[in-house]
Image (cartoon, rainbow, N blue to C red):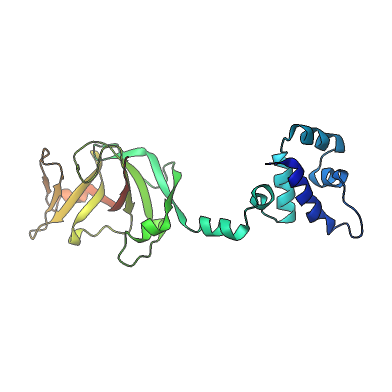
Length: 222
């Protein structure tokens, strides 16, 4: 990245504001809010005044990526549209307990390929606002879900009639289990790891749990 090249681009941009006038480095310095001496100092060191350039681009409503890297805005938009950002509750663990869960907890945003998310649904259409991510701790769901993997669950999918793996909040903590409803109304909590016993919840016991959503995918370990 060469500051002289960037300065020449800035000259082209501001020349439209200075009709019939040759543009000099002092004009670039003025546009960036720098003294001519400061700009000269930056040039000698080939050091980029990022803060001043970012403000200049924002004022002129142009892409800083184009100015610095020759990246066309359209190409950046295409790349950006490939990804979705979902809530990742990094400090919350499930499967081996971990406490209660609420969607007001602190979280960070996890960037995931849109095509990957869409392929998790038969309709190939996803509402990212209903998807959340948490960590799996423990081996009770191996080999399906591994320790320390990040799982994705849809908070609108809480109907267990079709079975599946669900994130469950209970008085004992947070768990991830396969759930199957029986004809008598009871629900079986199934661990995919055969070293763990399954558990059956009666209708009364089901009132003490809350389904947070159905697991739709995971971000695996390498």
